[in-house]
Amino acid sequence: MIKVAPSILSADFADMNAALKKMEVSGADYIHCDVMDGVFVPNITFGQIMVKALREKTSLPLDVHLMIIQPERFTDEFIEAGADLLVVHAEASMHLCRTLQTIKARGVKAGVALNPHTPLEVLEYVYDYLDLVLLMSVNPGFGGQQFIPSSLEKAARLRESIVKRGLDIDIEMDGGLSAGNAKAAIDAGVTILVAGSAIFGAPDPAGVIARMKNPK
Picture 1 (tube, rainbow, N blue to C red):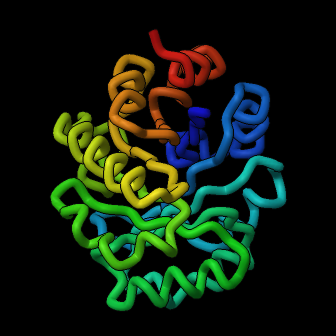
Picture 2 (cartoon, helix red, strand yellow):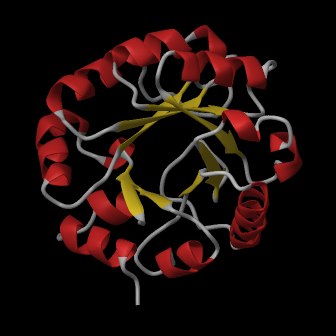
């Protein structure tokens, strides 16, 4: 089943409650929360307090994507804030295996994110601790960027590796996705599509989400 995770970063921060309610009735499967520290990526967004506030306002699972250095410092805090799925960057964690073990020990799904230039080989010894791999299809840090086509080949190779190992791991893709290129991502093996401006900037978010889940 294909799932869609609207990125709350593209919502109206002055009326977040309304944005959440709209996503609940529009067919969203997750709320994607991009946490940026201004160091790992050149932007600052929000932290644990915002995640906690979102948790209190929606029943949708929170897909929390930590774009921060040394994410292991804050995994417990984001779990306590209400993260249902916690994703850390392979490039940002010095002890990736331990970080994933810590997340899963708390009963939360664990994911690893890879920047466009990061090879799949970094996952070689952590597959058994993964519920999800997030492939960035733009360089992280800002919304509204153009999709990087080579991400599709990367997703296909990742899906092949997962199937070969007999594992049940979702592939999530984030960056430049829309109803127009969702089919290409799904055909490559992606199971969770993240989109921000393509959903929140549309007059009919439900229609966009429906077309992303069932592209022609």
